[in-house]
Amino acid sequence: MTTKRHHVVIIGSGFGGLFSAQALKKADVDVTLIARTSHHLFQPLLYQVATGVLSEGEIAPATREILRRQKNAQVLLGLVDDIDLSAQVVKWRFHDEYQETPYDSLIVATGAGQSYFGNDHFAQYAPGMKTIDDALELRARIFNAFEVAEFTEDEEERRKLLTFVVAGAGPTGVEIAGQIRELAAATLRKDFRSFDPASARVILVDGADQVLPPFGPKLGKATKKKLESLGVEVQLNSFVTNVDDSGVEVKRKDGTTDRIECFCKVWAAGVQGSHLGQTLAEQSGVELDKAGRVLVEPDLSLPGNPNVFVIGDLMSYPDVPGMAQGAIQSARHAADIIAARAEGRDVPGAFHYFDKGSMATIAKYSGVAKIGPLRITGFIAWIAWLFLHLLYIAGFKQRVTTLLSWTISFVTNGRSQRVVTNQQLVGRLAIEELGPHSSGRLIRGTVPGAVDGADAERINPLKK
Image 1 (tube, rainbow, N blue to C red):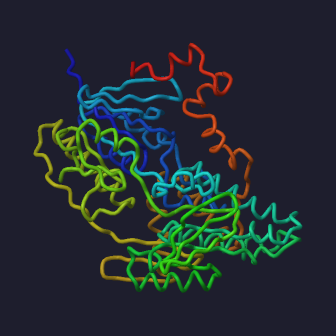
Image 2: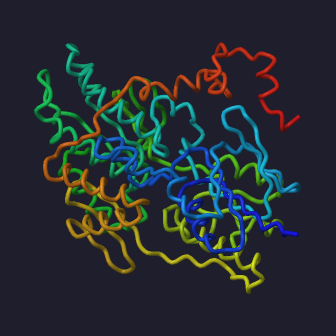
Image 3: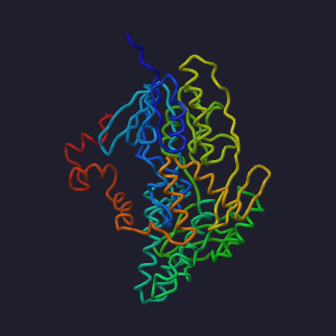
């Protein structure tokens, strides 16, 4: 008679999900990883996909390929809709085909999405940058703005097309603002006949009094100075109060207001925990912070549920930033506890985060880094950023192709990933317009918006 092994279900294939699965490779457990995408996304480099430096495949290798040699791990493609804590079951679906997967231990690593601070309608005009789809949509918006400006005869309309507003002056906002400016001033400088691409305005807006607030005033000041030398307009103490198809409205700290006419807007201003945080709160009574993240126990478990762990950007834990290192370290800690319990060993205690520092690039050959007491700017910080990010990209092929793409971009100012499609531009909006469960109906050829008998059966048979 064989004894069934301890079954660990991991939700999410980001840093938290992938590293927890890998940490359980030699444990006496079976692992099932369920994720809504087929890839492991290296999110810190999404802005380079959006600006044509890298392809999506270079920063998003297939999760199944990464774990192909891990015999105790299975990868399932699906969106988790619900978790039944009392029955210890995860309910998920692939489009509208529903499944249930039981667990003995559960790791929830679904991360965080973009937050619009209660103004979700902003998303229609100002996409965030959390997924491959987001990056490809932004790429289409950025490059199409230049394309339309080429044939537009109205100078006012052209100025609007060549104005790019980035909301949020954290690392993502700083990095994409710098890249758009470099794209306009260097990469595209000889490509158009009706206008000078270098005339494009890039405006970085943030409510704080400095860029990169977590990096401290010294690095914030140096970053602002470098951005402005590139031609980026930095507007601090300024809050975006409205976004529509033709521009953004901004309120200054002194009470004055302004409107910036622009076609392309990028939202990099906040994060919100995934919907599973609310699911866990409703079932367990756990508290959520203002960003919808779960307040976990010292060992990262869900209060009252010692076999359920919440890690990465979905957890709220003192002094742990929403960065890759927080997800990686919390993943390994949760995996160590599960493995120790399954094998009858002493269980690790409270989680302790080790701060390895923070880095950001501003432009080619320029970056900032905060490592312990050290504050580094310029070329050295940029090299350190390149090395660290190359080290953490999953997969040898991805590292090689990324290094090659970087070399081409840095040496020639060229960008090989400039292909955009109409589907990239409007796909997200079209699916949202069709409503929930539309993808399954589209695949089957059912008329969008109509729910027939078969569809009604599929909508959610597990919640009957």
